[in-house]
Image 1 (tube, rainbow, N blue to C red):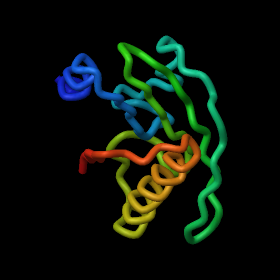
Image 2 (image 1 turned 135 degrees about the vertical axis):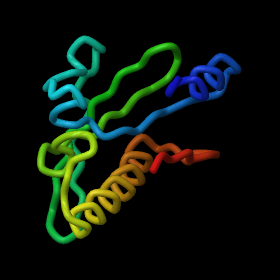
Image 3 (image 1 turned 120 degrees about the vertical axis):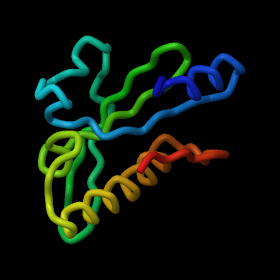
Image 4 (image 1 turned 45 degrees about the vertical axis):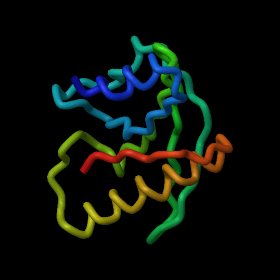
Length: 117
């Protein structure tokens, strides 16, 4: 269900890239949960906010969709991490800024950006 839109657009010939956090642990508490999805380390990107943060960028391709997963254990420890408002704002701002940095890095100007949350 979560991939319906992207799968349909890819089948119509649209170029689709998905940028998502790669949490240290998924909702089931499992670490390294992308190992079976043939993701490779693409690059490291540093982003400056209240301090410098380094993110590992993992890349994979499936069904003509390119996936980029952003990993930093401190920022994305788990999905739905329980933290204070200040930390949530930092996480949201870092994700936005890092996504834009990645788009510059892969030299892509998107026609449409769809976000969740």
